[in-house]
Amino acid sequence: MSTYDLVVIGAGPAGLAAAVTAADAGCRVAVLDAGPRPGGQYWRHRSGADAHSHTDWAVFAGLRARFDQLHHHPDAALWFVESRPDDVGPQFAVHTHSTVVYGRRLVIATGAHDRVVPFPGWDLPGVVTAGGAQALLKGQGVVFARRVVVGGTGPFLLPVATGLADAGATVVGVYEANDPVRYARHVGAVLGAASKSTEAGRYGWRMLRRRVPYRRRTAVVAAHGDEQLTGVTVAAISPLGSVVPGSERHVGCDGLAVGFGFTPQVEVAVALGCETFMDRDGSLVVRIGPDQATSVPGVYAAGEVTGVGGAKLALVEGHLAGDAIARSLGRAEPLRAGERSRLLRIRRRLRRFAAALHAVHPVPAFWPDLCDDQTLVCRCEEVSAGAVRQAVRELSAGDARGTKLLTRAGMGWCQGRTCGYATACLTAREAGRPVSSVDLQGHASRTLMQPITLADLAGDD
Amino acid sequence: MFIFDGRSIPHDGRQSVAAALLAAGIRSWRSTRVEGRPRGVFCGIGVCFDCLVTVNGVPSQRACLVVARSGDVIEPQDERRERT
Image (cartoon, rainbow over all chains, first blue to last red; front, side, top):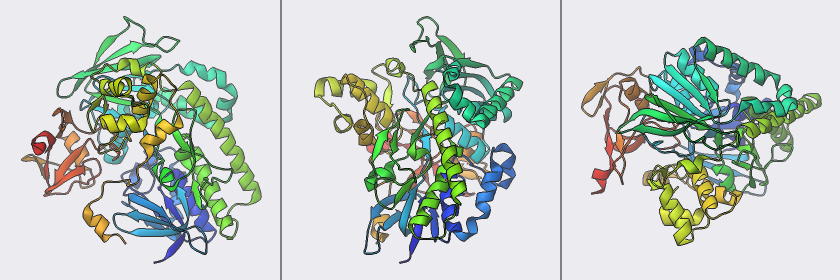
């Protein structure tokens, strides 16, 4: 058994930056990634030929060029992680289907997946997450539908819509539930991240060119179809955030890409006992110190798991984590002091921008009102909003654990990854209190993080 | 080509089963255990487990992650039938 200085979990921007920074300082580094190629969701690609469709591809190429100094394990989704400290210090065993990897330090850079809240018809074939539409396009070269509606909230809807339109889909409309005009209240934060505004402008121009209509304060409130999606109902949202009665209209489409921000994948941190809290956007995130260290000695976190903030912030956090780890192991300092303080400044600025983004694009408060009692909340176990409400009202299921045990919401194949946020919110709302980090933790705890076979278990040491 | 439900489906050698099925105009390939409702791709990145298929006899594989290979036999998953 050989022990690496550092095991990085996730090969997206944060993980790559942490890995190469630590490796540059002489650390022995292993990178475990669920995907077949490094890059994560952000730099998802089929081959090098896809470079033109990516922003910051040069950054990725630069990181990948430094890759041969570390051990990259592709297709290595981890299913279990354990802390095994010895006389030398912290040590971790990371179990994947093919191998067990040991490390003195751990970087959790597992990123995030789309956050979707339920609405009538959201389980129809033809309804996909915004990230799913993007992954099919960039990772597979497939446009998932011909006539597409893009809905939800957040800036990510723009690249999804323009990507689909550029690839030949008819994008009927982009429906943003919130009002981006409110960025005006966050002028300082927005100007501090000028490149982000430029990026938004570029997408705006591409939408104009492709004649993609963009409607703010408008939401998809239902999806229709029998065996698959045939259309959606969209409605206007009042300045106070509720659906304007009588404003509903039908839009025909065979595809809906929907997203309400992102849910960080914090299960590794939760399994190791790292402190978490509820971020401003309502997501459960890992609490870190100035050097990206979590509350558990030897465990660091970088990127979306510490608070959703985008790829540039993830890169900065990754570099800082790799730097801090190399120093904690007594290696040469990878970053000069000036460079470190520059990264800390950028991190502060990008976090301010992320906070503004979260303030402008919250998950709209009206969503539980859209869910009639028949609307599914948990897709895997087919648990309706009515069943969750009834469990709270009549069976006194006051928390996530109660709802799970009584209804099985969050206990199916996906283990609450898809419905955890919504179930936690519905339960708290029905119990007449605000949702808390404890509610979210109840749906984020997955000791076994992937389905495994008995043969996997038997073959593990 | 791989076989899905008795039908030959083209793929480009790098595509996931889900991508090849979508490109062939197939939108759903699983029916749920309780209500028998049709499901296909939802998250597209291996998170939601909605797109499960049987690949060469091995059930419950995520179609969005499994790379299609020529000669594969892919079957839709009817979970209501399997329960009874």
